Length: 275
Image 1 (cartoon, rainbow, N blue to C red):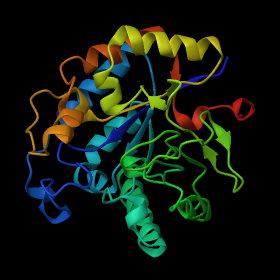
Image 2: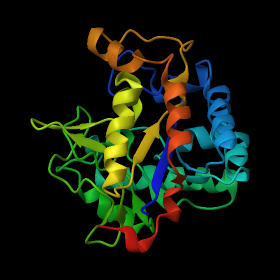
Image 3: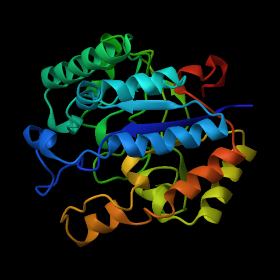
C-alpha cells in the first residue's frame, strides 16, 4: 500500500510569519528558546511508536542548535530544509531565494554532515506568482518539495493543484499536504492549526477515508503546536486564534495518528507510488 508521510517543521515559538508583533531575524537570538524541549517530546513520541519521519529544518535553527539536529539524525529521522530565515517565498527575489536555501543547506550540512534533498517553503508560500522557486530547487540539486498547498491559504495556496504526491515537469517529486474536499472548498486537516482545530474523531474519519482510497497521508506540525506554555504574541483576534487554538490536545492527536497509521520519511516514498 502507499505509505504515509509524517513531517515536523523545526521552528521555535517566535517564528511567526508576516506579523509586526513577531521578532525580527536580528532579535531571534534574544528570545527564550523552547524548540529543544518541545522537539524532544516529539522525538520521544516517535520513538514509542517506532516511527521515523522528516524534519524540515530552518537553517537558523541548525546554526544555533546543531546538537538537536544530530540527535534527530542519530534517531534515524530525515533532515530536510525549511530555508534559512523563514521568509515568504513570494516576497523574495529569485537571487534572494537561492541565497536563502544555499545558506540553509550549508548550516544543515555543518550540523549533520549531509546536505538535504527535500525542501518545504515557510507558510507553503509557493503560489502561482512564485512557482519559479520550484525550478530553482531543481537547479540546486533538491530531489523533492513539499511546499504546494492545494487549497486556499493566507500565506500561499494553489487551489486546483494536484492534491496527491506527483512528479513535476522539472523532475522534482512534490508532496502536497493532505486536504479534504468540503464541496464548496478544499480544506487542509492534517497539519499545524488545522490539526489543532479539528476534533480527533473528524480527523481520523477523514484520514481513514483517504487510506480507503490508498491515498498517502501527508502530515505536518511544528514543535510549538504541542506547547501550551509558550509565550503568547499579540497577533490580533484572528491570528491569536489560529496560532494558539488546540495546543493542549495536539500531542494526543499525534499519538492517535501514530498508533493507527504507518509512516515513513519523505525520502523513502517509493517511485511507483507517484500519481
